Structure formats: C-alpha cells, structure tokens
Image (cartoon, rainbow, N blue to C red; front, side):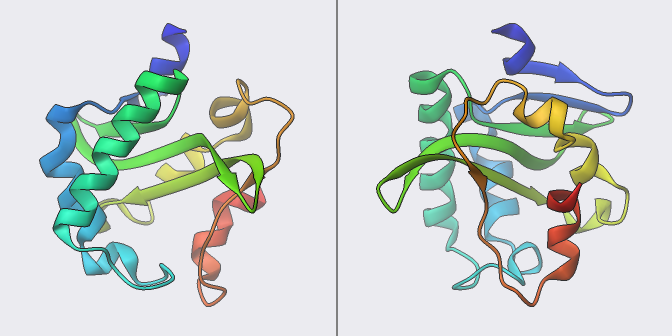
Length: 143
C-alpha cells in the first residue's frame, strides 16, 4: 500500500497525513481565503484541528485518506479521496484545499488526476461538496 501512502509527481510529494501535520494543516483548513466557497464558511481553528485528527484516523482505519501535498518540501495543501457515508450510502469523498499562494499553478488537477487519485477506489461513487457559485472549484472535478 506504499504507493497510496507516499506518491510523487513531477513537482509534488503526496503523503499520508500525520498528527505532526496538524498545526499547518489546521491553519490552512481554517483560513477564510481557502473557504470562500465552502458551504457554511470556514471552520474554527479548533474544528480544523479536530478534522485533521479525523483525517489521520482515516488513514489508520481505512489505509487511505487525504494526502498532505508538498511543493519544494513545503506543505501547500491537502487533497485526495477518502471513504465515507453519505445519505446512508458508502461513497468516496473527493477533497482538496490549497494555500492561496499556490492557486493557479494547476496543483489540484495534478493531484486529482483520475488515475492518481482514484485508481485504488472501489465501485462506489465519487463525490464532493461545494458552493454552486464556485466554478473554479469545479475545474479539477470535470477532468
């Protein structure tokens, strides 16, 4: 399962989240700029830290989850898929959140390229939540 836990692209290092990532990932998750199109607005820093620990637990329990995305050895985002229940049905949640300084660099598309992000998913549907006012957010999902 190493190929899922630790992957590389030409520019990026994708690795499983650990508790050591909590401070930087929680800051990214709770940044109002990264949540402009999130239904309900940005979570608090405490809610973000709790979510990071849930993401780590997902890796421990499911052997898969959201990756920490590093560019030039710096954490610049979180992205990937993880299994969850939605309306009583198992599905894969497609998720990404990147630091504003790397927006426009094509990183979401690079990480979420279908063969990379979903090659280990089962037959369950893949979905995501976003505001319908966020056309840029939908770009990586259309590919």
